[in-house]
Image 1 (cartoon, rainbow, N blue to C red):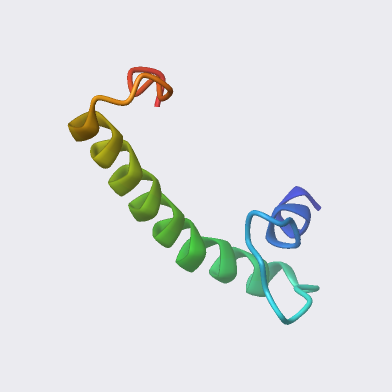
Image 2: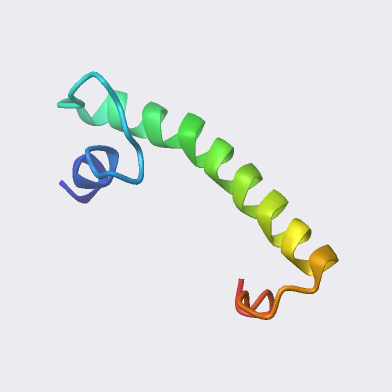
Length: 59
């Protein structure tokens, strides 16, 4: 149930409703990788800029 809730959450936007566990795990995996890459890129950017509003040690 939690996997389906996560797949249906705003964190993983989709135009199609995810109702099967097998689809949800695939969907989270693909988008999870994308989210991780984007997050790491943003953290690196803020570290280079010396931004004080991001605690990269906690990331």
